Length: 132
Image (cartoon, rainbow, N blue to C red; front, side, top):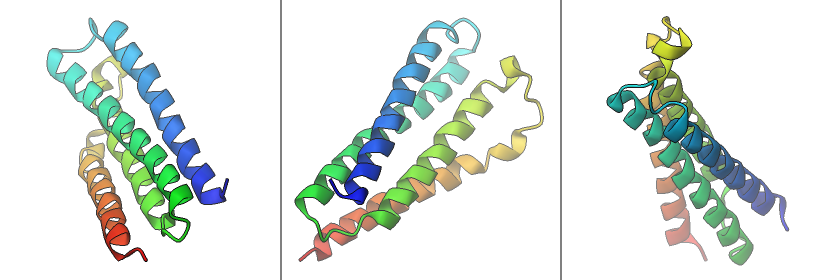
């Protein structure tokens, strides 16, 4: 297994693990503590973490099939984007119950993370089209 494949599979599996844990936490512990809108936001962060985790596993498998495929920048954009996007949503959705009142500045972090995820997946599409 190449380092690129290992890093992608490990990052993807980690995001999936976090998604399952936080999804269960949201469905049980947070369901009565958050408003429906806050819970929906929280679960949006969970879903995007899961989607990108599965995508990173796919990226690792693609790298093992297409060894010349350039994935390092793609992988880091997706990882950083997912961390910024999902964690900012988690914190903003739970700020009332966690008493994190001064995190309004995190609002712009969410679209920055989303933009990095989009850029990462777009770069992968371009790399796949150019692959020889």
